[in-house]
Amino acid sequence: MKIAVLGTGGGARCHIAKLAELGHDVIVGTRDPEATLARTGPDMMQNPPYGQWLADHPGIPLATFGDAAAGAELVINGIDGHNAVRALAAIAGDLAGKTLIDYAVPYLYNPDIERPWPTPWGVNPILGVCDSDSLGEQIQRALPDTKVVKAFVTQEQATVVDPRSIGGGDHTMFVAGQDADAKQTVTDLLTSYGWTDILDLGDMVAARGMEMYAHMHGAIGFALGFGTHFGVKVVR
Ligand SMILES: NC(=O)c1ccc[n+]([C@@H]2O[C@H](COP(=O)([O-])OP(=O)(O)OC[C@H]3O[C@@H](n4cnc5c(N)ncnc54)[C@H](OP(=O)(O)O)[C@@H]3O)[C@@H](O)[C@H]2O)c1
Image 1: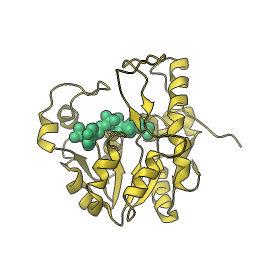
Image 2 (image 1 turned 180 degrees about the vertical axis):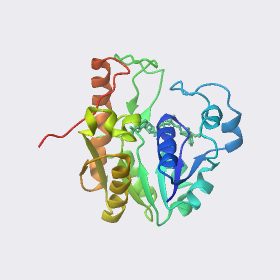
Image 3 (image 1 turned 60 degrees about the vertical axis):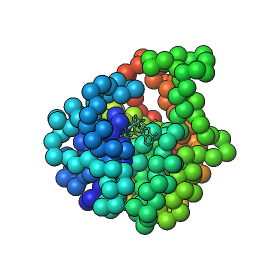
Image 4 (image 1 turned 90 degrees about the vertical axis):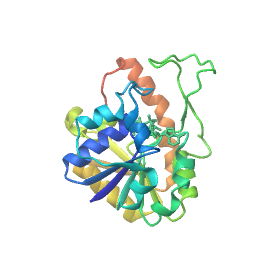
């Protein structure tokens, strides 16, 4: 399948590599391909520059967000949560009629606001939207002609593409969105990643809970020790 991954961060790289390994025709979207390839330093999460990563994953094309989305049948959003709505709305025409999987967290990194929850990268980000709305809903409202599905966001990025690396794969992935066919497309993709327990949470309103879980995910991660891998399972 022709799949566009919009984003060059750590989460996006996991999907890009896995999709290529599965034989998909992957294209990656970024703001400015030349500028992205010219970077020499690590990003905020200390991932090496994208060009360096690409050297180890040759042959994967890089285009602007719009050009990448235009030629794809399925699109994955890996744009930083605070900027995703604006960036996606700007390419609404390229996304029309397509399924868009959104895994972004609406994190707001603001080192000027003090928070009593220090993280390895300085401050704990706050959620820019929560409780009465979500990033998933904002994206769906901004893209009425696109079938948006929220997924991935409650599991670690490496686990999402390799569920069997934790507990033999015995844990749960969630999906939410308005369109049943789009959710089936995402479920099929997740099955190809190795997921066996995929729980449909219903309409996109469920994205509120999925995104707000980010703080709980952080708390569990810090309790287990930063860098410890874990999954979440709904026992029923
Ligand atoms: N398990 C999961 O589901 C999971 C795992 C990791 C992260 N996340 C969430 O998913 C999102 C992406 O995470 P990530 O780690 O892959 O990448 P990230 O570092 O959060 O974001 C990088 C991407 O955002 C784009 N970007 C940054 N500022 C922008 C702006 N002003 N306008 C347009 N685009 C902009 C960058 O564009 P350029 O390519 O041009 O630099 C880059 O492609 C985040 O919200 C993160 O919290 C979820």
